[in-house]
Length: 284
Image 1: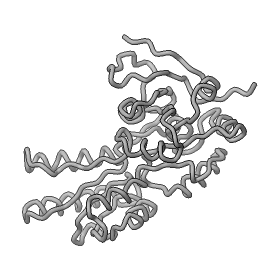
Image 2 (image 1 turned 90 degrees about the vertical axis):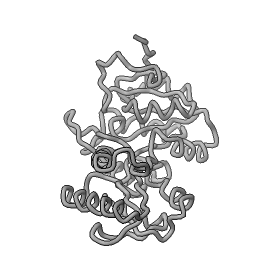
Image 3 (image 1 turned 30 degrees about the vertical axis):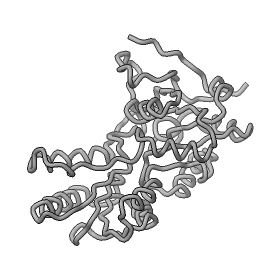
Image 4 (image 1 turned 180 degrees about the vertical axis):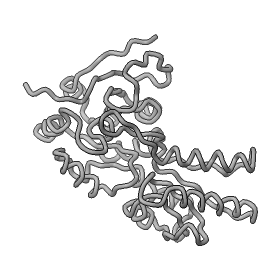
């Protein structure tokens, strides 16, 4: 078993020029901020420390997310928020999807991300070229998933081409009072499993995953910050820690989100550089 060094928020601020922060499980839950998060952000703002939120949440535009965080007492500006759904613009361009008909599973902000990327948002009952699963909310869950799955099966039978896109590959997220909920990555797994059950071994029936741990979101943070001397602070091994490691960054696993604080059997490729009990900032 590998023993990972513990580090404090104060030491992180001193050691790294740029901090990358996950949102849910690090700074907030679905209903409010975590203890000490407001003071931590206040200190970063006070000293002018560069930081960015790298979030797989594809349900909120940066300005919507900033407003929500500010309502939780976190003074975070929208320009500091890098979302996985913001990667849709480059994805649509590189895959020649401008003008494509898109079914979007998610709320209105998710649909706006797709429009901004050049897609045309349509209903699941009509013809479509692309399925974007952005969130677990914002639509009638069972009815919508059933309709999308049925139409995908019909498309395979008709030998029609389509794209499956998953901005947020997270499987679960932390809620208040140590609760947990599923998110869009779990919905994508359901559809993938169903398609593979009907068409075993057939290629092209898996979602393209855009958010952490994939490198594009870290590349955007590097572009904005102008440096690779960054550290990723997150609560999920498979997204935050794995993504940082594969991008060549140091990482910090906090114990206030998805990862089990009691888990000492972390595989080598998911080992964080440091661990923290929480992001809590203790004023001098």
